[in-house]
Length: 133
Image 1 (tube, one colour):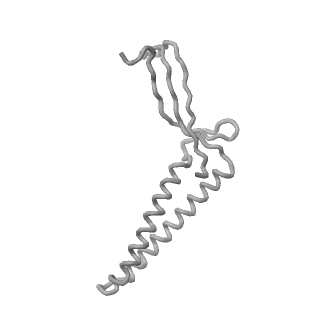
Image 2 (cartoon, rainbow, N blue to C red):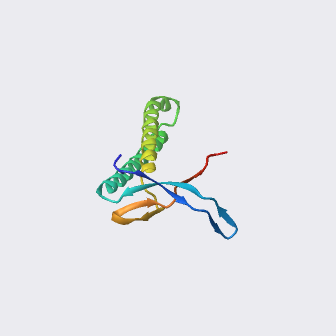
Image 3 (tube, rainbow, N blue to C red):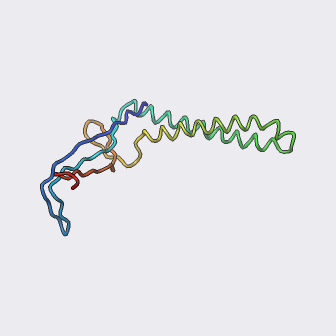
């Protein structure tokens, strides 16, 4: 994984707070979001994803071309193996591409200090003081 995606996790203890008509009890709030260091490795990971995408597009075009050239029963049988191999390659690369995209920041990031990219959204957990009951 070249993207060096890491999770940023922290918590804050809040006293009771009221804003408008909402009151929040004193509690501990946990935050989790993704972050990346915007450096050469991240750029390489983005380039790698772009190359995979280009290869997928090439294979899909090749698949359409082979499919077009293999009209007729005999040609279909001969071209079937090539189509199956191309389809398998396309699926494998698409899975790799989706995994790569999942590790890369999208446009929903905020530039933080020291070239750190922080995902704009994350998860929030609340742990009530005194337990559940």
